[in-house]
Length: 593
Image 1 (cartoon, rainbow, N blue to C red):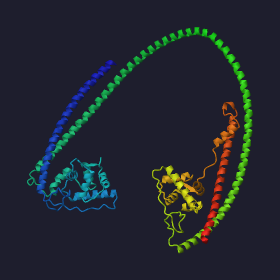
Image 2 (image 1 turned 135 degrees about the horizontal axis):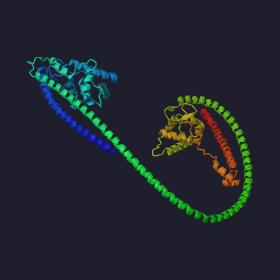
Image 3 (image 1 turned 90 degrees about the vertical axis):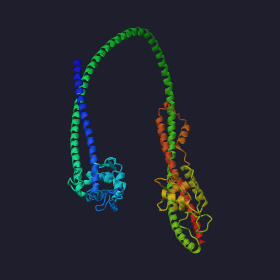
Image 4 (image 1 turned 120 degrees about the vertical axis):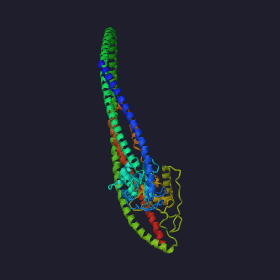
């Protein structure tokens, strides 16, 4: 393998030397050809400048550098064709882009004397070889188009502009369109003299032969460049073969390295076998020594067994004591279960009583609400009559854009002016508490207003609920300029559900009553203390039954708390009903007065 590797190395070195020599030769030829191309390109540029001089001397009109980028077809030397503004209004971006390119093609066909190269150079203000969006927009302006950036971008996109710029080849392709208006450079140069009315006779153009010679030289240079490109392709093919030879060399090296690794692996396995043999010998010696030690420890183990037997006897005595304690604990648990059953019976009796009271209160409330609605209709009728009396007897009336509340000491028809109350510097919670405190003070200062009237004035759409928008308007009439976040927090304090506040929650929040129902954890803890139940689970095997009983008791107490809450609501509504009756009597007295 080593001999073959050396042979391959020699072959690769020979091929590499050969390829390097051929590569150097091709590079020298390429350099010479490029140098010739540059020289001939300079000659072509010189002749092109001379041709421009001939054009300017033979034509009666020329392109003015300060005016439009296109000259008039029939204008005299130095005169610039006036460009009319072309409207793009009412067109989409695509329609405007197509219209611009169509106009540019028509314009180029009407001004045949302009080559595509001259046109591109006048678009390319910075002579960078590419026309960017800013340069294109200036060129369109000189054509009479006032185009937006979006339209300019779409126009350049139709020409397949890349990187936000348009090169010469893509410009010529786009300008030719489907009608091929702009011809290639060779045909343009040959027809230029005809469009400018220059005689094609060599006697009338002394430098025409030089131009033809330059074109021939340019064609010859192109052929030389193609030859150089062919040589470059050959060089690339040989470089690929060289890379393939290098890859084969690497494969041979990998094979040699693999053989070397196998040899090293076998050596390591031999060393491992020797080490394993040494470990077996040392382990045998340890077993022999441990056998002697085990004989000595067997006598000690016999003493330990005797000690363990005495410990088991003592454990049996302790087990008998624990069994007696368990029986006593079981008797106590039975007593606790009896007390729990008694408590459940009491709770069931109380629940039944509360249900009966609840049904009775609901019936009374329904009758009261029915009477209240009838009397409310009577009040509305009397209120309308009172409004007629007010409009006829008073000089001022309540403005529809005023506050929703009347002043306590004001006369009939006058509206109390509401001062603005600042909430700056307060957190959302502080602002919410301040608003509710002000509303409670306001309600206490205006005793003539019932909670029901107040809620109806908050409820603009008479839906039975006050949403966030209605609440915000009501706060504004109170002088508060509150954000949506503050309004949401104020309604949350009143336990609003679904983003709306009903009448019962509104009354509860306005009265500021506290929840008198204690939490169940303290009741349960006191019950277990009164019954003297040990809280240690290990000393009470039936503790799970007690926990289940306590959970049932807790659930029953939650139901009792719910009944108590409903009872409180019914009592509050009854109080509101009595207050409504009193206010009704006051209104009747006012109407009679």
